[in-house]
Length: 331
Ligand SMILES: NC(=O)c1ccc[n+]([C@@H]2O[C@H](COP(=O)([O-])OP(=O)(O)OC[C@H]3O[C@@H](n4cnc5c(N)ncnc54)[C@H](OP(=O)(O)O)[C@@H]3O)[C@@H](O)[C@H]2O)c1
Image 1 (tube, rainbow, N blue to C red):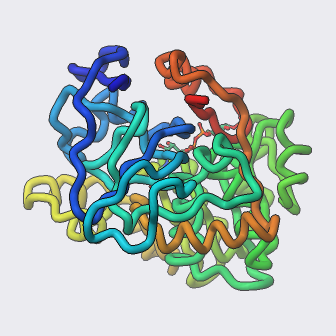
Image 2 (cartoon, rainbow, N blue to C red):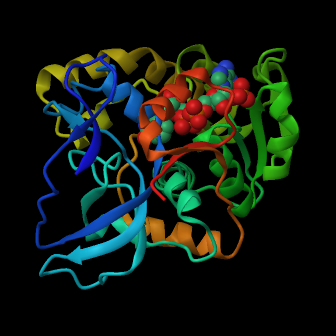
C-alpha cells in the first residue's frame, strides 16, 4: 500500500510501497480518509524524539486518523466493518500517512456524525492533549482563570473552547491578526505576544497551558496564583514523566537535570509545574465526541492537502501562519 515514510532522521518524507498492516486480535483495520498533521510528526522526523520514542526506521509518520473500519480482529467487540471512526493510534503504532492502519480498539472512537472526515482527522491528538491538560491534570473548574498560549494553533484553538466549556475565564496569547479569531473561539482576553508582555497583564491565574517552554514557561509560573498549575507540553520533561514512560536511568537523570531549574522556580513560587506528553485514549475521545456533537467544541481545519501532497503538508507546519490544523485528505 502507499505510505509516506522516512529512512534517515532529517531527510524528507517520501512516498513508499509498504506491506499491509499486520492485525492483532484487538485491532481494527481503518481505511484512512483523513489524517491530521502534527508538530510531533515533524519533531520525530528531525530526530528530536529519538531518545524518548526510539522508532525503527524507515517509519511511516502520522498520529491522527479518521476513516472507515475495513476489518476487525477476533477479540474486537466495539466496532464493525463499515463504522466511521477516528483515533490517535498509540505511540509505537503510529503511521496514518498511509492508505490503511491497524489501530488497537482501545484507541478508537466512533467519528462524531456532525463533522466531516477532515474535521474528525484534525482532532484526536490536539483534543486529547487539551483534555488531558485541562480536565485530567488541571481539573479546571467554573470561574477559574485559565491562560492558553498559542491560541490560534492546533492545540490552542481546541483548548480555548474546552476551557470555556468548563466555565473558565480564558486569556490567550496570539498574533494581533488572530485576536478576533481567538475571541470567536471564546477567549475573554487576547494578548498580542509580539507587542505585549502577558506577565505584565495577567496575575492570579489558576491554570496555564504552555506550548512554548523556555522563558514563556518561566513567566507563566509567575502569573499563577497560590497552588496554580502550569502544564508544559513543549517541555522540559520531568522525572514523573520519565518514570511513567519507563525510560532508562541515564535518561531519567538527564531529564531530571533538564527540568531542575523550572521545578525549583515552581516550588519557590508555591505553584505546580507538570509536563504532559499526551497519550492515546478512545475513552477520552468519546467524551470529546460528545462535546463536538453538542457544538461545545468545533474542529478548526486551516488547510486540507490531498494525500499525494503529504510531504508539502508536513512542510507547511514550518511555514506557520495557519489557524488550527493542516489535514491530509485521501478522498
Ligand atoms: N506534549 C504533548 O503531548 C504535545 C501535544 C501536542 C502538541 N505539543 C507541542 O505543542 C506545541 C504547539 O502545538 P500545536 O499543534 O498547537 O502547534 P501549531 O498548530 O503549529 O501552532 C503553533 C502556534 O504557535 C503560535 N505562536 C508562535 N510563537 C508564539 C508565542 N511566542 N506566543 C504565543 N503563540 C505563539 C502561532 O500563533 P500565531 O499564528 O497567532 O502567531 C501558531 O499558531 C508544539 O511544539 C507541539 O509539538 C505537545
